[in-house]
Image (tube, rainbow, N blue to C red):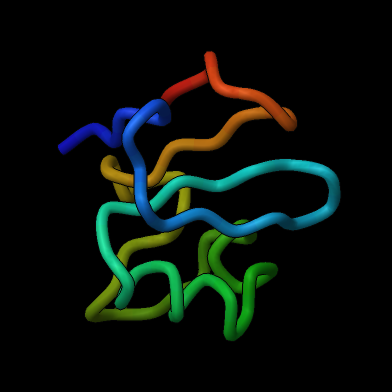
Amino acid sequence: MQVDERTARFTSQHEGKTYYFCGPGCKRAFDADPERYLRGDAGEGHPSHHDHGHHAHGHGSPGVTR
């Protein structure tokens, strides 16, 4: 699933980037430990940020989707 940055209801800011999420659970998990997800060691049960297709990120503005 892809997240449309224009309509995403769940976003977080981290180190100058905006991350877009499909739902509140994914946003909460990311907010609790963003580096864990960005490193790719989120553990079993939740894929890393890079493997989790419904998270998208931009560099402060919409336009880059994953």
